Image 1: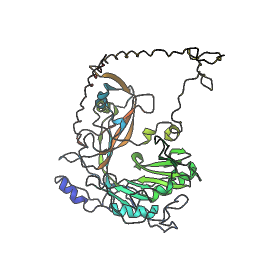
Image 2 (image 1 turned 30 degrees about the vertical axis):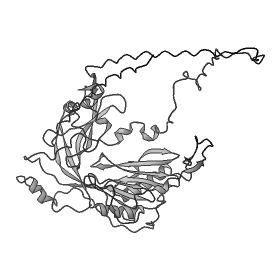
Image 3 (image 1 turned 180 degrees about the vertical axis):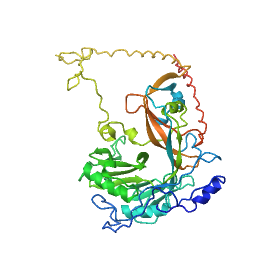
Image 4 (image 1 turned 120 degrees about the vertical axis):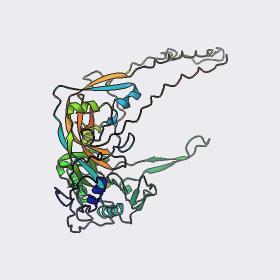
Length: 482
């Protein structure tokens, strides 16, 4: 990752023949460097336990850095063309007014009082793949204890070039990567998951029941890492696989009896981005999964940006969308607290202040006598069964009235935070561009992101048209023969 692309000058000149291209050897503010490492005692074949074992000494990847190659906007055209809708990364917060019309709801945004009116400047970064997939997997295999030769995945496709080391049959640890975009990789250790306990259920005599296996996943056993231990392990792991972090950068995203998960984001010049490294440990403790990226971050220049007030006008189209740091999706409480709520529990049936819900009133069946019978029926007393009358057919439901116009919801943007947004170009390459995260509600989830670059820096394709499917015609009533 410390190698400067010596052919970059030539590529710039070919792309912009009338624009002088500065040398990549000049003006470099920061580079990635592969530090010399001392081999540690980590056994490359020991895959069942990584916790409490130093990772920094084995096959450590170079730490992600920023290589600055600045140039002014060429007159020949934009830096790149954004991917059309449906390409690149997708997000739930991408649901702008054009997307919400399908639900017959349309948002109209307006700038609130106090929203900034001053334009600014912001840097654009290109995320380039670092090295080769084979070299990446070789280094990761040495670090995470997965032996073998890197090879193409059985799911390999030129549009989705995937590689792996280890196995793909879920029998032993493996590491896979998709060599496009940010070179994301994923480590998985099936030995960390307990085998289910299965019991044969015999087939009943009449053959109507049984004849299968009843499998139950055993409760987790063994030591679980504390938050402090998981944080320390994550710092070692993330540094060894390319991300320079400290304990303050590690976020706990899940923590329960089944395991503890952490993540840390890539920061570029002090700004958090959407690229994350993750790790998850199960009781044992065993590292069950981890993920990261393999990129070189290159600055492509600093450009003018519009003000937050002007950026509000871009929210309606959704075309100026980009993915911000994942911390915006966690909210104020965070994922770890949100995942502690037990599923299937209803709240609010008891009166406020009471601990138990009110017991439902038991009403006796009117056809059942409340007193015990005194005599058993005899043959002298004839018994008759009530005549069963056919139940009347239910009345057909009224046809719903279909709205002819979408519901208009007006939202006032009250604040705008500067952010680096992850976007994808038409060729599947990843970029970081300046933008805003705009809030328009009182909760943690009422926000949208928008690119703040002025027109012309990047090319924004026209949004894909949204077809509104008509409601299906009501089903005809079933014919009933009298």
